[in-house]
Structures are given as C-alpha cells and as structure tokens.
Image (tube, rainbow, N blue to C red; front, side, top):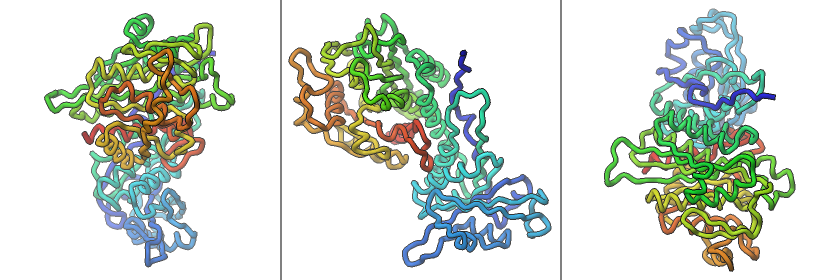
Length: 522
C-alpha cells in the first residue's frame, strides 16, 4: 500500500482569531455578521462570597437577551471551575427578544465557561474548553478575554488554539470538524493574539512530528522536513549523512543508528539576526532525535514500552520548532538547533553492550546499555556546540529517562543546570508558558559511577546507584565543558495518555513555548 503524502500543520491550519471592540450590550457587530455561539465567562466563588461571580460578558449578555445567565448557571449547578462549560440553547429570534439579530428563527447557543479566578493557567483552560465545546459551529463570539489585559489574552488564545488541535492523522476520509472562528469582543490586542497563534502553530508542528509513525518518520524523512521547513523560513540548514557523518566525527550518532536499515543523520539549523554585534549571544538547542527506539540489543521490556517510542524524537522536534519561532520573532540573538537523528534498532551491525565508541571531539564511551542511547547522540551535539560553534549557552531537550517520568509524572519536566541564571530564567519561562520545570540536583557523589576501566566514561553506571535521571544529566554535563548548560528531561510531559484542557492525548509538544519565551526574554 502506498501511503498518502504527509502534511504537517502550519499557521494556516489554526483557527482564525480576531478582535471586535465593544460589549455584548452595546455593540452593533451582532447585526452585521452571523454568530453561531456566544461564550461568556463565569468565575468561581471567592472568599466571603459563595455565589458564582458573573463576569462582564455574562452581565452584558443577560441585559441584551433579558435572561439572567448567572442565575441559569446557578440553577444548573455550574461550579465555574476553570476549563468547564455549560451550553444553553436559547430559541431567540429577532422579534421575540428585542435583540438585534440578522437571522430569524434560529436558536442562539450560549456557552458558559468556567474561568475560576482568572489566573494564567485558568484562562488557558477556559480557552481550550471553548475550542473543544464549539468545534464545527462556525463563528464563536467570546467576552472571556476581556476580563484581563494582554497577558491574559495571550494565555487565553494559546489555550484556545492548543485545545483546537485536531491531531495528525493518516486517513482517506478525515472525520474531524473544523475549528470555529473565534472573535474576541473587547479591548484586546491583535498583535498579542497573533503572537499566541504563532506559538501555538509551532506546538502543533511538534505534535504532528511526534505522531507520524516511524515507518514514515525515518531519520532521512525527518531531516528532509527540517531542511524544507527551515530553508522555507530563511534559516541555514546543514545535513551530515553517510560517510560525511562518520568523517565529521559524530561517532555517537553513527553507533546508535548503525543497526538500522534507516541511516542516521545530523542536522544543524541556524538562525542569525540581521544585526550582529558584541552583545549578540549564541544559544544552542540540542534535541534528541531518536525516530524509533527498540532499545537496540538491550531490547526494551516489556514490549508495551515500545508503543510510544515513535515519539523519542520529541526533543528534536521541540528544538527545531523553537528555532523557527526565534526566526519568526526576530530575536536579537543567534540560535542554532543541533539535531542528531537515528533509529535505535537491532541488526547485524548493531552496537553491542561493552563496545567502546568515540563521540565528537574524541571522548571514548563504553556502551554498557544500548538502550541508554539518547545521551550518546546528544554527546555528539553538545561537544559540537562547544568546540565548533563556541556558543554562549546550551539547552538540551530530551525524552531521556523513565526515571524522570516516574519522579515527576506528566506535569513537570526535570531541569538540570550548571548555571543558576540560566536555571532561573528557564524556570520562569516554563511557569509563564504553562510548561513547568522542576529543578533537580546534579549530585556530585554519583559522578564516579560513570567511571570506566577502559574508556573515558560509561553511558550507565557499572553498579546501580539509582537516580537514573541525575546520572544521565551528569553524563551530558561532562560534554558542556563548563559552558552554561541546562538539560530538560521531558520524558513525562512530552506524551499524555489522556487529554486535559489544552494538553492533547499523544505527543504534546511540551517545551516549545517555554523555549520560545526564554529566547524572547534574552
């Protein structure tokens, strides 16, 4: 069977979000365009008042349609928790309500949306709830974003766009309904809205790349997508492959990928601002790009753990999306994504446990476990960033260890850093993006566990010491050679078994927006 061409999401696929000024009570906009649904916000009870808190949109809608929506919400026992909705179908026509509506005889659907206390997180959840409850409706007018300033608008729109993500699919007949067009009624900034849509589009792209199955998503296919999209955005793209890959010294990437029929590659995607001066910094984003991970000869057990291994390249997808975002935002610093791509398979030419390889720069590594492959390919990339690019800082992103997922679950990424300024900046960016990071310690006591009798370093300890995520971070830190460096282990939040608010089931694109916020903050 020949598979259909693979389409990836772009900004054009996202729902349209635009602004109209005024309020539901006073604006003439409703007499000019058909609106299929109106979404208004209801706040949760506050201290000293156990009643629901009607927001401005709820009040104005009540006045316009002569119906107390807050009372209806209370009667329906709607608790107004952030991310919840209650739909009211009102058989309102032009003549019956006194409202000025251009369409007669059609019901008006009003969606009450819980906004909680209106925090950033709650506004994202509210946006996602509107997207999911109004899919396929056509045009939706909302007043929810009017309850806060630009910051709240940004979070709300991101939540709406992320919640509208339909998922990448390979089907002959698509079954999903189109996301609704969203009109924000109030004093909202179109520029802020457009920035939020761009960030969401990059997350859609990362989610798509994580979802594409590995019989399509070989290292070559992924490298081609990076090259096509990168050059299309005006970025510089360099691909190392075949004999060139080995000749350049990327021994870790070669060793991990040599057991597969699908050859490994190493991709460098670079953005530079128009003006480069003494204050221009250079940030390297290193993304783990294992397009499928069987564990190699140290095959994964139980077999169920392999099912999600097509997403083991999520770090590379996120790093690539972030450098695209840096170019779109025209950040004033250089950003380079280093993307080692390989399929970790078992075959006649697979690297064996106890083999010794040489990674970029000549460091020898004893491969004690072929399923600890991510750190090996990333050693190539981190060493290359230091020795060839002379970068000012390095951030690596990887679905690296099950230990991080077991420790922090799917809500937080593990953050390791050798530089406090970089650490705190990433924590702040993660909190603002709704992609939180938990700072983890680099326990020096465990460094000796990676000593090898025959090589410079082992890829896993000879004797178990526990703390698998910490030990993996210590391995990577060695190759940073003192350059400010941070490691994001996103094994937990990069994939979800259940959707929740703006977070979809499957690959989530976790870290794209936090990285973009960090790059914009420099």
